[in-house]
Image 1 (tube, rainbow, N blue to C red):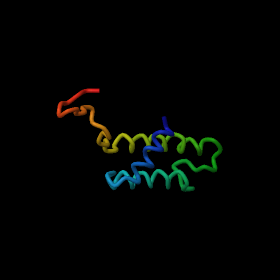
Image 2 (cartoon, helix red, strand yellow):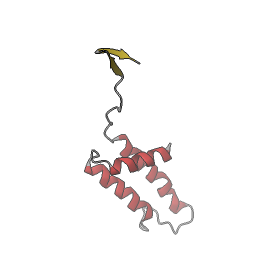
Image 3 (spheres, helix red, strand yellow):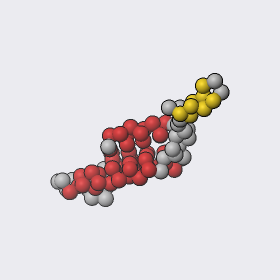
Image 4 (cartoon, helix red, strand yellow):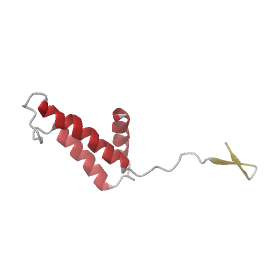
Length: 87
């Protein structure tokens, strides 16, 4: 699940339809992951990684939940001979 959200987040980051505040939140999440200044410092064994393990997935899920819904690629109704047909 998390891996799919990260892929979706990367695709949304590159999309021009994604709002700027979500792109900035994505950059913040990446920066927080590699930044040595954390809520709990990483020099504390195991406990220092807990904030990364908990906060990054929560932040990614929050961003993904606010992404604009893309328009469907194919409409559910197709026309054949000028008449609508459902698949």
